[in-house]
Image 1 (cartoon, rainbow, N blue to C red):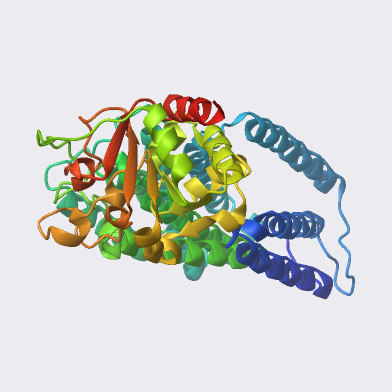
Image 2: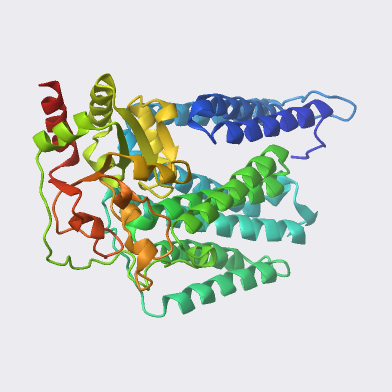
Length: 485
């Protein structure tokens, strides 16, 4: 079906949509404006979808409104039916999903974005005339072949990589790194072949070239994520988010859709920036993240042995007494809090302390949890006031004036070895200075765990540390009972 240039109103609408997406990203940068940011994003996407639907029918020369045929109307009904089905699935999932399962949900959504890019690429390859990318009868424009190859490759990598990330986060697959022999050589070789075939695709659009690019891209997605330990998933999630954006942008060029290009570029660039920030927070190399298997050579994800040293165990009653007597308490949550789903009872404990006149603050590390902002989302779900939540750089200087550092489910982000032991795999990673607090309360299930980095934590054995060994939710519930009585 022949396509004509978009009318001015459609181009303006796409521009408005792009502006709304930028405002959405701006709003999502802060918990206080995140709801508004989501609304901007929803409005922008609604405008983009409606304009795309209205302009898919032929627009006769001299007219500004499409003139759909009977076949166009049938196609529109099918598209609306698919949108309705997707909306039902999305709404049902959003209502039922637990906030602790948000990381794997995000990974699953990333996989769908990647798969959508692959399917669009396949459709464009099979029927290039419908997409307006023919250079001559039967021949796809060489530039469009590059867009197709890259879009399908990035989409396939996003899909297969996100599937592995989902499986690790959801417990369907071990979170430990799976290290293949000569994995870096295999990865680099596979990527080189994909790029080489994409270049060759501009000269020969034979099916075997397109199929091979697609198959190898699915394969490299698995190979890149399998070597990464489950505890390193915050960077992986942000990286896959970036990939999904670039896949959408590439398909936007294929579809000649300005909104997809703008949206994909925004998501891709913001995801890349976030990945860089996360890498810096974890003392990782950004290039090694792209190559896959980062954080494994020096012990990341390894299971180390705990050194048998004296430590002090406390009870819920002991903790309640010290918390009630404190002037300031800083709570440091980690993934263990998310697993135990202790965020609600933690807020209840904080409310009781504030009623006693205790200042309570929450300290969030950039890589706490299983995706960027995971702890912020959980605390927001528990209705923790935004002004009580602080990032690492904003609260780091307060630990010397803090009576109790209350660590719940975190480990490596409070390990002093990151500052003192150059041989440690976490050396150089910014961590909280909890050792400066007058008292440290450390909730963990047992003393056998040493964190994903496989290194012991000196905080366990400090004179001012009280180890509270139990399930995080159960321990905080017992502390709440003691505070109430």
